[in-house]
Image (tube, rainbow over all chains, first blue to last red; front, side, top):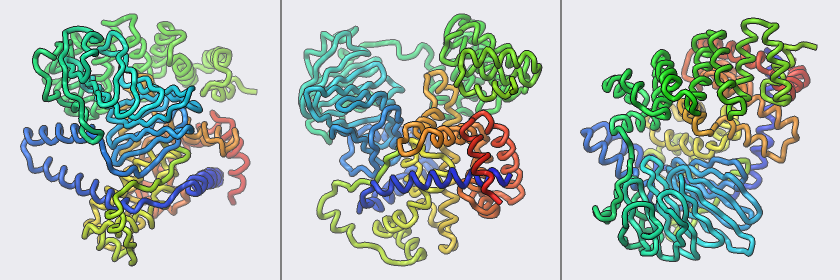
Length: 415
Length: 221
């Protein structure tokens, strides 16, 4: 293994070179970094004490307060900055992170938020807020074109200062404009709406709270009423993870948030990574019944929870239910692929795995996972029959000459 | 991620003045200061050990999109557990343990999400690879090799990945790796053995890495 040591050392040298470059472009550590980290540390200690000592009701209250707090605008300094490049996924868990662009524009991601840079150009960018809040300042120029996507909504910008909140759990969306104007479209809006300085809009599945009369006509569904816009940047937009206080029954358009409340609960638990609780609740409700009633995406979540609690049989049951009940959907095709991975990686049943990967390829010959499925089919066949594997290797190389399994396929074919 | 840097805050002059007193003292005084909630001590601690934490995390995670966050997470965890540090002379190894733990949690969190990611079209692994792929400071072969190494590491069980990264990339002694991973020497040897077999078997899938292994691996005596 001494060759690996030499290789490892070389990789470390390259990493050090890159770290050196990063440090050369760094400015001084902010004076307040110690205070900020200590403050986060104290917050976490307090939260831990509360969780340990409080009843379930108190814990839930703290959770919702935390969620609201996370979505409030912060005026604290940013600690880290990232120069925007296409394809980045920036996560700010503890402290704010600033994303800067070539034209001087900047997006400050609040702690607890995730932003993806889908496209970055000289005076343009397409950003996707996966959750939380982003404060954006776009420098105006004739060719400026920025867009912030949040779930089904799009905020189009040419030069302005504004904030976007997005809470994917409840489909809660909010925009507040401080300077310039933005155009919002998608989601609950049937037509684009311009938001001007001092105005805001907040929309949530099941209820809408509007800061502009003109928006009412643009809403799909029930009529909506006015709601005051936040007075300043530091005032929170309508809290996106809890119903706005101003939401009167008349302003609420009842929409199908979820068909099964209990199913949503275990699904949310699964999405939050609480797999054991998700599985316990699913078992309490009746796992077999859920497999008969839940939707395809819900069953995929359930399968994930089962897998991560070590219940491979349950994972397979959920995936097979998707196959049986939603035969020609994307979910069914994905289930075949996942069943193939379980068969290969957990069961070491390479024949079964090959069958599942073939099923995926038959259902989705040009699907998103086709290349991966064909590669994994190749791996499974290599464990069984070399001549069949060689045929599959030739086919793989025809389809994906530079794919991730290309070297493996060439090795199988030999010199 | 490739141009992550620290930026100055926009604080009030009063606050800046209050914080501008620099902390002077050894590790023992530093820890005592942090326990008292002294911001200057916390800052000095961050300045003194930021580089070491960053390097350790880069060895394990590569130039990951969540590297900055994981560094911060490491320091917050450290500040929360200074009461567990019995010997301030062991501060560096204690901090590395925390960084390793934070990296392990990040990797596990990601793996828990992998099915959802497949369904939604997201793939965190691809992000890590992209971060190597967009680096203009490295040539194509280096990028390909780094991407290959990262892909192989991503395929390892997390504990084997930690053992391999710390031993082979960071060059730690086996005892140090065992201490950082909080397990026995025998366990680390087993994990490292399995990881090396897996890594060696996977290298031929990545021609640039295979070439490196032949060239650079030969430099080892």
